[in-house]
Image 1 (cartoon, rainbow, N blue to C red):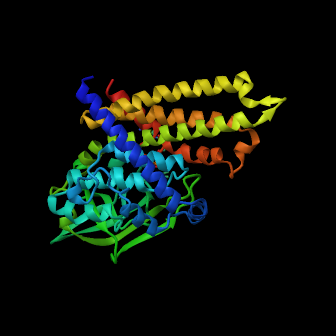
Image 2: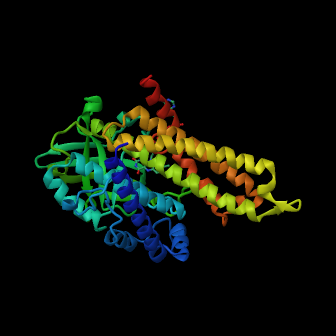
Image 3: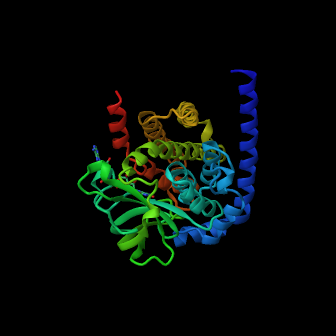
Length: 386
Ligand SMILES: Cc1cc2nc3c(=O)[nH]c(=O)nc-3n(C[C@H](O)[C@H](O)[C@H](O)COP(=O)(O)OP(=O)(O)OC[C@H]3O[C@@H](n4cnc5c(N)ncnc54)[C@H](O)[C@@H]3O)c2cc1C
């Protein structure tokens, strides 16, 4: 590593540490425990907190400043996500807003579209969502049925989406549609839908989830919804599938970062517990089984982190491919589920009580093997590259 590289590393580390302190301060003020338990009960984070997050610079940190962002990169998004996870705020859809929705618009939008949407995503005027999954199609994205038919200067969208993060809150939704049902993957396009006073658009139930209860996850209904053709992301129809395939590695790496934060939080909680809790006249940590389980977990965590960091560097260099991103997601999510399970076991019966933070992590972590592409789909993608 050259001296210049070291200086750059030092500077980004300092910047990320300042950002972490800023987020901690923000969460102390805007996410006190009583607010979080209300959000958990309501299944949604208060809308005005999104605006405060925008004002505090926590939305769109990696967007260029000319579009209202903070001019950072993926590492800034990952730090925001990490601090949310370390507070047990898994489910608040900021990582998706920052790390998925905004980058689609930046990378595939026209200049007019970037100017139209990014500043409002950055200041929290708009909350973003992306709607791929349908009741009949999740892993098999080519099997979606939602269609968009062009008519003059408009598209008419009809279809149903489900499991959509930020579904109750979102004001801007990237909808995956078929613009040519006979053209297979080349018939898929991404349409940006602004929901305000939009005729034919309806939000379904806020779905009750096993975990991540503070975030809203919903069905969405599009019944002959009219959007201008200028809302087609990029200007050419049929690019949607390729756009998705190019962005999904980024989404999967974000989930890997979520898993790393969950692992660190689980280990921190568990170490504190086993140092305190006594059985047979000594602290649990003094049993060899306890220390061996934690030593094994720490080893798995460290090995996982090294690979996730490697993939992060590949992403920053523009070289993260589908197989590597899939390996990062597969390994980190399976490892996180395993470690959280072991950590819960070390908490004994208390670990099974909902009031215990490890119980919350146990519920939250399970979906990491499912959303953003299941572990089985990750294996398919890795196998294809063998
Ligand atoms: C909390 C949560 C939030 C979500 N947020 C969003 C969101 O914001 N936007 C969005 O679009 N979607 C979202 N999703 C949807 C998520 O991405 C899908 O649930 C996921 O991709 C799996 O699709 P599916 O549920 O239809 O399962 P299916 O595709 O029906 O899969 C069922 C099972 O079959 C297996 N399987 C499927 N195909 C194969 C195969 N070829 N080989 C081997 N096994 C296979 C799967 O691995 C799985 O085990 C979210 C889901 C959850 C739970």
